[in-house]
View 1 (cartoon, rainbow, N blue to C red):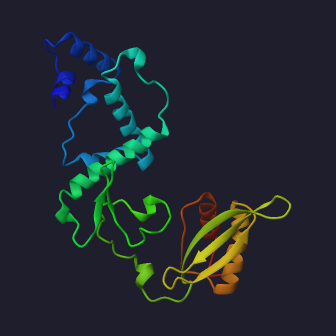
View 2 (view 1 turned 60 degrees about the vertical axis):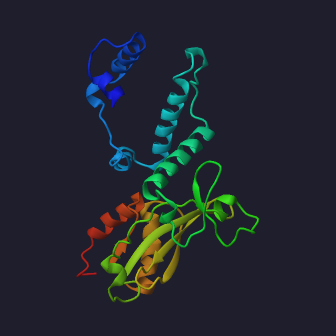
Length: 246
C-alpha cells in the first residue's frame, strides 16, 4: 500500500523514492496501478494470464527485481530468465496456494504429509521404496475442486457411436518418410473406440476416414472435436449437405 501511495501521489519523498517513482511513472501511467488484496490475489492471477507458463515468467521477473533492487546497477542481471528462476517462481506460487488452502496440519486428515527443504508440502505415498523420480513418489499437494456435472451426451442412454468425440494422434512416420495420423473416434457414453488413418491435417484428408467411419458405424447425431482447422473445415462441408435427400 505504501508503494501504491508513492506512485499515485506527489509529495516530499526522499531522493531515492522520488527517482524510483519518476522512473516507474515514465514507463507506466499511475492509473494502471491498483492494490490487490490477499483475498483476490489468486483470481487476479487467473484472469490476467492466459496460461501457467505466463504466470511463472511474470513471478520470475518480480523475484528477480526484488533480488536486484538492492544491488548496484552494474551488478544487476539483465539476461533472459533462466530455468532455475522459473522453477523457483513455480515453487513460490505453490507455497502461496498451499498456505492459503492448507493453513495448518489439520488440513490433511488421514494423510502423511511432509515438507521438503524448499518449504513445499508433499504427500508420502506407499511407493517410497521405488527407485523413481521423487516428484512422482512424493507428489505436491494442491487444492482440488468440486466435480462438475457430466454433460448430457455422457450420461443419457444412446446408441453406440450416436455421440462421437474425434481427435488426432501423431504424426507417425511410415516408409518413404511420409507422415500419417491416427484418427480416434470415441463414444463418450460407452467409451467404445474406432481408429482411422489420414495422411495429412487437411479437411479433404480427414473426410476420408470420416466417411469410412460412417459407413462402418452409422451416422452420428453429434460430433465433438477440439475445434482444429481441419474439423472446422469439415463442419463447413457437412453443413452444406441436405441430409434428408442423402
